[in-house]
Image (cartoon, rainbow, N blue to C red):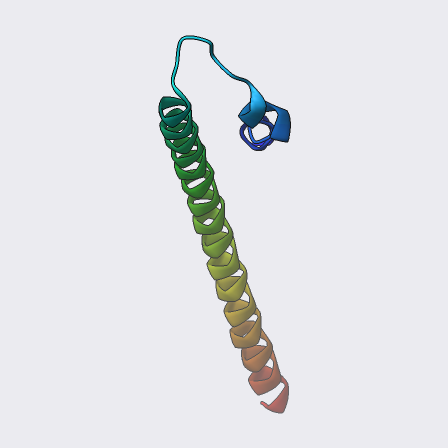
Length: 78
């Protein structure tokens, strides 16, 4: 992800291609920026999905601990 973020350095936006018009440069910059944002968004979505899955698994583990503790307490009461 760092390489994608690095693509947004201020100096990159100041480079001028002698063969392109300023409007074309702006459109290219916008297209490149949107592509970069789309990639970052996809990576964040994948990370959040993995974190949500992990949180669900941790929640399930705590539920199991609660069940085991309740069963242990019932066994002690006889």
